[in-house]
Image (cartoon, rainbow over the protein chains, first blue to last red):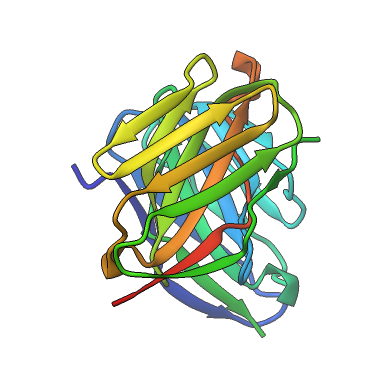
Length: 110
Length: 115
């Protein structure tokens, strides 16, 4: 199993550009999550999904959108990128309890 | 709103010393607590998960305790090694199936084990 995979690993965006961060898991987990981690800080939840077709906001959803059309994929969309969205983004998945994390996407907005 | 705190933010110990990492949370209505390890520039690796009904979990040199009534968890790492150098994060999830097992993270403790 590959576990949770994320693409791209790194990206630089200009202010106002848009992009989609990809996340795929091959463990048939129902739950999937997007977190962001700012330098020297813990992780904050952006959006989560409890199954295909069901998504909900986390603590810091502004400026982001998600969709969940399949069990495996949970892309995160950034519209009109802002410098405040410079961060490392982690995708995670879980069956019931234990969450498994992807390697992260390091995003810089300049 | 749940808040999770980890003190100290950084810790340096000589090799062989036992590590004691602290995590406190404000709302005791938790479903579980999870400890993670994060190496620089890498993702998170799950170390231990403690269900709210449990008092502790052990894996090799790692032992984590949970005291819900006081809102505390402690991660013990016995006989530390330079390879234990990393940032350690704790996170709690709320009660209730509708809560979706969302994690609230502490800020982490950065550990350096000196040879």
